[in-house]
Every structure is written in structure tokens, then in C-alpha cells.
Image 1 (cartoon, rainbow, N blue to C red):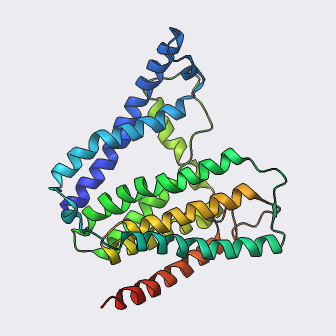
Image 2: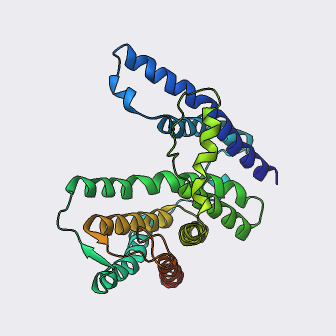
Length: 293
């Protein structure tokens, strides 16, 4: 339980330090822009500096967390070298992409979505970049560090559920649409409350949070099964690429909440698709590993 308490203290400290640091970053940027140094900084609103401040705080406190948790290497986090990493990445990508693409084809056929007349190619580049980079960062943090520390409590299911809830909550947060008239020392703390505005919409909580929570459970289970991050990275990359590519090439024709949200990762239908991927992943893992014995 000490490790869980350290993690709780870590996240609380991130929020507090980030809230205090955000005004300093904002004022510094404005001062630089006023003096002609990096003038483009003047156009950025306060909530952008708040988000960056949270990231800076997370990085600054990362090393102390590992030291206090007595983490010296991968073995302390329940991770091991995976010689089959390429197979796990590829398998994860296919297991997450195929169900989503089949669903996408059905949505086009039912005219829930239609193909866009104009394709913005730079946007596709952003999707590819996100599919390549985001899984490494998020899996290393959520499934690598946070889940690794919690698994040392010996409560596997509870640890996976806790990290999945955190994973979903972080992705469900949205930036404030209300900018402070004057940035003060308390503006960062006001942004904390604004960030949770999305939880006021019960339909979106059911449609989005539940799906993200299940995805987090799948990624956590994949990490525990393989004792590595490669299968979760593959699954994560596939979901981002398939959902992003479909949003790039098609647009929604009708509102279908809670069945389907703004993309293929929000709604009850995506929830079912994620469950299908989980079943397929389990079957694939069992067959793949048994064939090596």
C-alpha cells in the first residue's frame, strides 16, 4: 500500500505544482513576446500553458517517484526482455485495426458516415505521427511505470482497474473554453476545475469514459500476459491509426450517441469492438505461445 500512497502523492503533487507553475510560464512567455523574443508566444492562451505546466511537473517528479519506490530497473516493475517484440507489436496492430475497419465499412454502407470530398493530407501525417509516438509515451507511463508500481501490491485486477480508470480520466479531460480575463496565481487552480467540465455530460461519460476504461483494461491485461509493453504498444497504435484514418477520410452524417460518438473510440459500439479485440487477443496469445512450447 505504500507504493499506492506514493503514486497518489505523485499525482496530487503534479496537479498542485502544475497549477502554480502555469502562471509563471504564461507571464514569462508574454514578457518574451513583448520584448520581441519569440513573438508567436503571445497568441497562445493560458490553458495551453496550464497543460504544459502539468507535463513539466510530471517529468520533474518522475525521478523522485522511482527512487522512493525503489525502482532500479525493468525487473522491479514486473517487466522482462521480450525477444518476440516485433511479433507482439504486429499482432497487436492487426488485432485492434481489423475490428475497427470492419465496423467502419459497415458504417459507410449504412450511411452513418460518408466519404469526405476533400482530403487534407497533412492531417493524415499527424495521425501517423500520433500512432507512432503516443503509444510509446503513454504505455511507458501508464502500463510501464504506474501499473508496474501498483502490481507490487499483489492485487493484479485492482491495479489494472485503477490504472485504467486513471487512463480514461486523463483522456476524457478537456481544456477550458473560458480564458481568465487576468491571469493570477490562482488561475491554474481554476483551470483544474474547468478541465473536468466534460464529466457533467452523463451520456458522454457512459459513451466515452466506459470505452476508454475497457481499452485501458485490455492494454493492462496485454502487459501482464507478456510481461512487456510491446503488445500494448501495438494495440494502442492500431486503435489510434484506424480511428484517426477513418476520421480523416469520412465524416459523420448523423448523431448516434450513445451508440457512436465523434470517432470510432467513443460509444457503445466501440465498447463492443474493444471487447471483441480483447477476446481475439486472448485467443491469439494462447495459440501463439502454445505453439512455441
